[in-house]
Each structure stands twice: as C-alpha cells, then as structure tokens.
Image 1 (cartoon, rainbow, N blue to C red):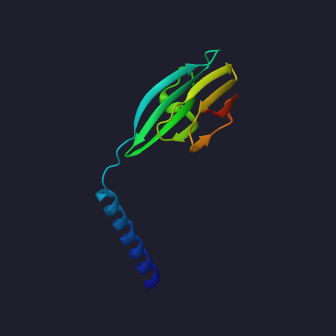
Image 2 (cartoon, helix red, strand yellow):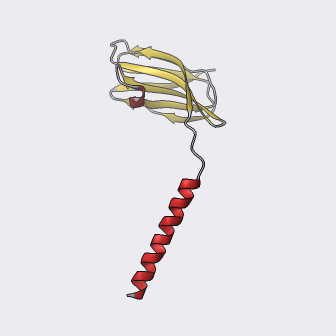
Image 3 (cartoon, rainbow, N blue to C red):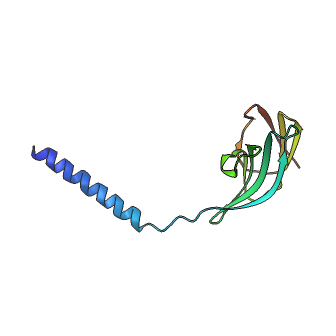
Length: 124
C-alpha cells in the first residue's frame, strides 16, 4: 500500500512540475505568411496557393492546394522548399498541376492530391 501511495505522490509531483514548466515557457509566436500567387484550375474546382512562411529566422516556400471556396486553413501542402525560392505553378488540365522551382532543398513533394496529379520539376 505504501508503494501505491508513493507512486501516486511521485506522479502528482511530476505532473505539477510539468504544468509549472509549461506555464513559464515563453509564448510561441505564430508564423507569418506572405501570399505570392494563386492559380485556379481550368475547371474552377481547385486553387493552388503559392506563399512564403516565416517562422522566426526560418523561411520556407510553399505550394498548397485547396478546393475553390474553401478557407486557407483547409489547404494541403504539395510542395515545400527551404528558403525564399521562385516557384511557378501551371495547370496542364483540371487534373494535373506542374510545379517548377530551382529549389536545392525540397522538404515536401507530393504526387497526388484529391485526384489531381502533381508534377514537380527542377528548373534551372
């Protein structure tokens, strides 16, 4: 019985210490986003958003897809590159999007999104 009480007290102490550390942590600043371009699919069903996200000193360039009329929070990244790099998006039809960029470091490169084929091309 003493062991159970000791373990309960230890768990309670760890929980309180974690809560105290969490409450004392500095607030996390949200990432700033800057819109660069937007391209609508030929059938007007999807949007390709090109934007930069700055989180502290880190900058990434994104291409994200979403349904037309959907809020920005509903978009899904299909291409993410390190740094501020040029990106060109081109719809080759309602179900194919070409993404061109000279980015040397690519973090995300999806090949499909909701029936849309995505072609990532390295440009000079």
